[in-house]
Length: 335
Image 1 (cartoon, rainbow, N blue to C red):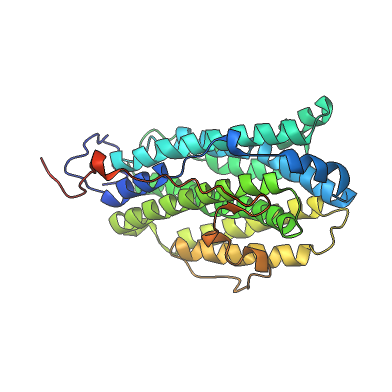
Image 2 (image 1 turned 180 degrees about the vertical axis):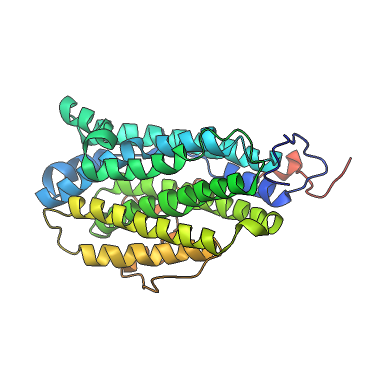
């Protein structure tokens, strides 16, 4: 079983072929930071962004600077060791690579967007020193710390704690905090601003969507194998967690939009966050609580985005092809 504390290293017979397929799909998504062109962004930062938009961008950069490192830390410390599926651990290995690539991307972003050394230092320490960013980090650490000392998931209580952590990072951190920040980026892209940031976000968006899909597949398996832990009490805790996450993200919104940005408002962002939160709750097997609609037309089809940089009219699709001459792995083969 997927949360059995006895380590399973056997890929044959394959118990969870859906996770192996997810790993294979994730391998097709390979890109590098060398493919990101920030040259037009420099011009926009200097000549086109209003002071209000510049403040928004600085807050985004401050959040991005360490966010994926927090996700990666939780993945290694609290997630990888408890998932008893060698197929899923293969996917997690690719996810860790993705997170490190995102860290490198945002390092490049900070270096390019914030030339002043003191401001750059502030961006990298924002999770400690900028209240609206720190609150998001503290939210993550609270759920990380809750299970960090658990060595084995040998009781239903411990398994439920693990599930809460998984739902926190899939539903609230990658699934809500990141998507809130993506919305700001795509708002700016919709105005023709910062194409380099938009391109990087396209690729990160695609990776994060796959990470969420993987977590939800894991939750499906856990629910089937341990249905007793998915009770009303868990649903109440997760619902309260999601409500807390929205308030944390709205605090960031109030800061990011504190100087006023034409076309964006806290009201619109709250509606969007509630819409996303309902999506995540349904994915996790719970009921919607907000029934809000997506107020942003520029986000409606973002999950089926064509990865083409329309600013430069060149293809930046990074899904790798499969060479059939090299063979493939059968999912149902036994020794």
